[in-house]
Length: 182
Image (cartoon, rainbow, N blue to C red; front, top):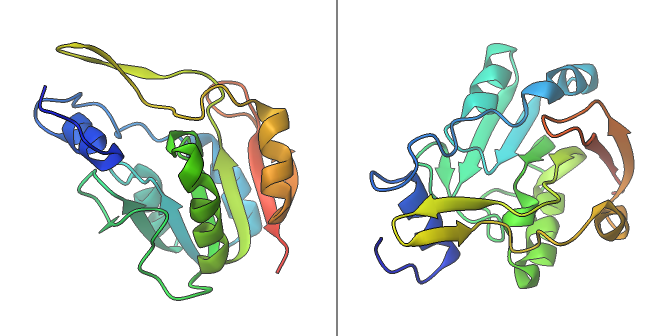
């Protein structure tokens, strides 16, 4: 495995030829389809979009959807903490199993950016446990905030939104539908 000097390098390797070919291909938002349809956004940004499965689903339902990922090769290539969109660009921002990948020092900046570009909602899922990917040299940790539980996240997200828990993600935790307080 080549030397990994940054979070982006890690994900470039994972998405690349040497990495796991399946990484980013799962649609972690597929169980949120009914939630999104109920809220009826006209515009949507999927942060950490991977290979774009959720974005393509949304486009197929007439939603003007854009994906953002800093390594997958799909959508807009940019970091969550510095998104290249004007303020209030999207009614909804989705982030499925993304926020736990941020380094603790980047979490507030990422949430601030999501708040800046969204006008109405966030629909989120958060992984609460460790996640590793096999490498030729062993394992690579993917979730810097993996030790944080639901109770830790709730007051942080509540600074931005009223949180409703709905449905169940693939791991049994509810999606968080966040009505932004703007």
